[in-house]
Length: 116
Image (cartoon, rainbow, N blue to C red):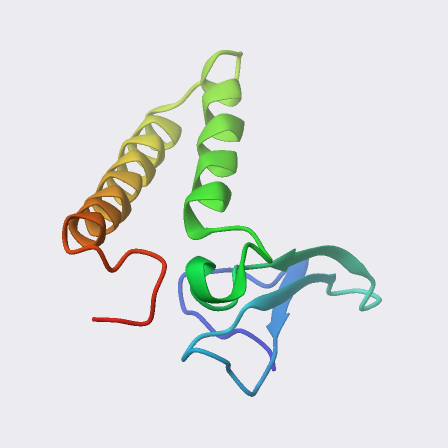
């Protein structure tokens, strides 16, 4: 299934993911070349709670950290710009909120489980 989002361009690449979700979300993504459909990257996210199924994919935080590292490298070069700085700030904020969610689940002793 093709990912549709009004904030992303699809001039050079597009994203696909499975159409039937396990655990209420897509877990397997492919980034493809618009011109020829070639698979450029595959990302498999954690599918299921770690305590119940073990580690089987990357986490949201992993991907966000990669993007922060990439943008920070641009900021440390001639490609430094206000927009990258703002994006880094918002991505760091995203990590903070995800960390808070994890901490809250740890406090409740439900981290890594299906419990709400």
